Length: 228
Ligand code: AP5
Ligand code: MG
Image (cartoon, rainbow, N blue to C red; front, side, top):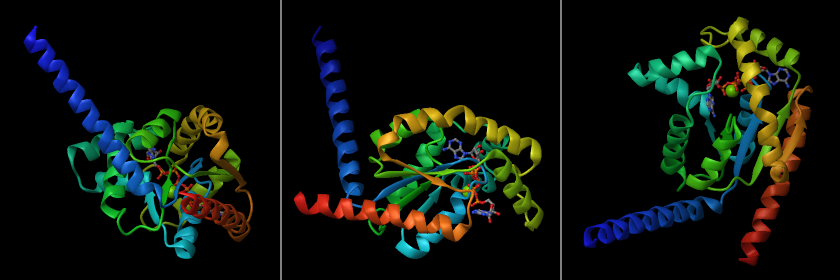
């Protein structure tokens, strides 16, 4: 009996420590903006992120790039990731979130804000991110037709010296399917912080709207910080 009580007390203590650690992490990053970048394959997430980084100096964390780095390392885990990525499916969130968490932890002391590109791709990813890392201030959703996305990726693949392993027509179609299956649930769950942007336009026109939205979020965050 005494042993059981001791075990329960230890478990409670461990849970409280975990909660305190999660709260500490959330507070540490909550004073800088966290922006999720959503949209299907080839909609222009990376292109817009590069422009945002240039203007605002934010830290760009692309889940796809982080996974490709792991693949490039040649590890066993990398080989498993590669298989999933070339099938056009989603890598288990434990892998993606741990890569993102490590990158946020590494850079949060010097970062002006985070662009989390290609995440969340299904609604539970969003829930886990906000529990384990920090709440997102904004989700930018780049809305684009499948036809345009397919054409953009094929054009990128044709122009590339080193082609991405998942930039072939069969895998692109599977990536589009995965995207279609999961995205409406994300948009529904995060409707209050999602801004949908028409990504069928010219890169600069899209970026002008992106800037308006980000400026608005930054102002809101500054006002909130003053009240606190
Ligand atoms: P990821 O690397 O994120 O690929 P993606 O989402 O399929 O998107 P892309 O990177 O191909 O396109 P983009 O939207 O960045 O467009 P870009 O700016 O390059 O993910 C790869 C894989 O990793 C996933 O399939 C999955 O397996 C795994 N993964 C990633 N995240 C995950 C997660 N959270 N959970 C589980 N698994 C995950 O533009 C494309 C082309 O179009 C470029 O050539 C560009 O120059 C051009 N272009 C861009 N904008 C315009 C424009 N407005 N007009 C004309 N051309 C344009
Ligand atoms: Mg990209």
